[in-house]
Amino acid sequence: MTKTNPASVTIGILGSGQLGRMLAIAAAQLGLRTHVFAPDADNSPAGDIAHRTTTASYDNTAALATFAADVDVITSEFENVPATIMDLLADICPVSPGRIALHTAQHRIREKTLARELGIATPKFWPIASASDLKAAMRGHGLPGIMKTCTLGYDGKGQVRIKPGDDMDAAFDSLGTDDAILEEMVDFAAEASFLLARNATGEISHFPASLNHHRNGILAQSTAPAPLHDDIIAEGMNAVEKMAEALELFGLLALEAFVTVDGKLLFNEIAPRPHNSFHWTIEGCATSQFAQLARLLAGMPFGATHIYGNWQMDNLLGEDMWKLPELFASAGTHVHLYGKADAKPGRKMGHTNRLLGS
Image (cartoon, rainbow, N blue to C red; front, side):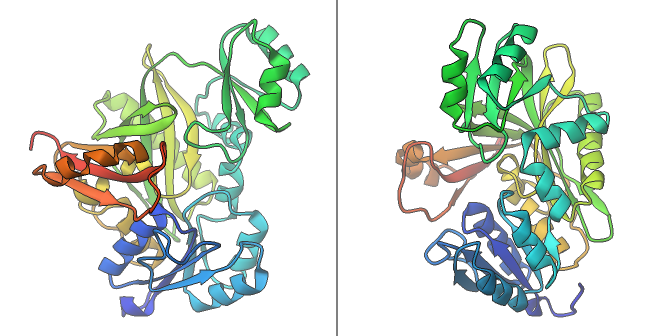
């Protein structure tokens, strides 16, 4: 889809959170319009910025059809949209990231299995459907591991650490699902993420890699460009490109990976959407991840992705809001707030970007 007047292009966004908000801001800067669809679209982070909103549940097929008819292309700010919804929308207009990408990214075993099939190294993992499966895997493994729900877990939620001698029945029951995965505990030296954009014709644009630090299962800080060996960077970029091609991606794809103490890169997970660890691109790159997504959705050429110096992104959680006066007064610190009313502990309220050395 290419229109000579950007103002005639409307991007539909499923979801009303901060990723949709920052996409709507980037789209507006390019002269594009946005329409947010979500159960809580009104007075939401994304809804506050969008040109139009639809407040309806994701299973309201009539509202979805009306929404799709009003836009030129649709993307989702989260990967857990039911495949049936994307199929319905795809019959009306182009959708991003595409059915295959969503279906794979929604399930930890599917994404890790695909990575292995593509020759991308992963930690050892075992499907867990019962306490008996967990006991058998731990007997064979004999080392500490992490059991996670295969779907819906994020920011440290839906997972439990396990070591030999723990109560396996209680651990399994604590997840409340029979669709789980046990992953070996990785002795890693660093965590890194790799991001690319792929347009409708299969062209690809990479971003510089990020080095990440988590606290209590939540991303705390990212620095870029990641200070890793060139071979590791090349391997990560190759891995995310392989995944994007296999998924027939239309949109953005982020790949998170571990760098082990002996210098190996191990796949962790993918996300077919803008990624928290690349929020620094808003000031740090010639084209941010959100602007790049808006461009490809509108059929525009890719923007350049070279980085301006060395950047640090810090998440602002509910418990960090007391820092705002100091942050606003700090020269060279770019504060981004998401417009959320309730500053709850552990809730992402915003982030800061800072050019290191400034």
